[in-house]
Length: 90
Image (tube, rainbow, N blue to C red):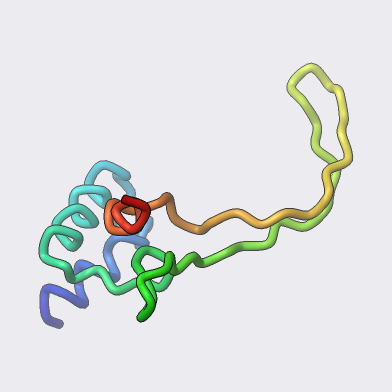
């Protein structure tokens, strides 16, 4: 398997790469080489952010002190904003 595909698979493989710092280093290397092609970390053809949204269903949240709160469903990005995405706002 070529390095690009091997490293791409490694950044989400917590079984063979349990150390998050190691996966982060691999991810950083992929970014520097412009080899990370995951949906949700770049820009689309128009230069707009490509975000991979995850829906979090409505549910009850329990605080550490036992307090409870009913939360509505919401969406959150699968990945943090990347440098390339941030640069689109400059």
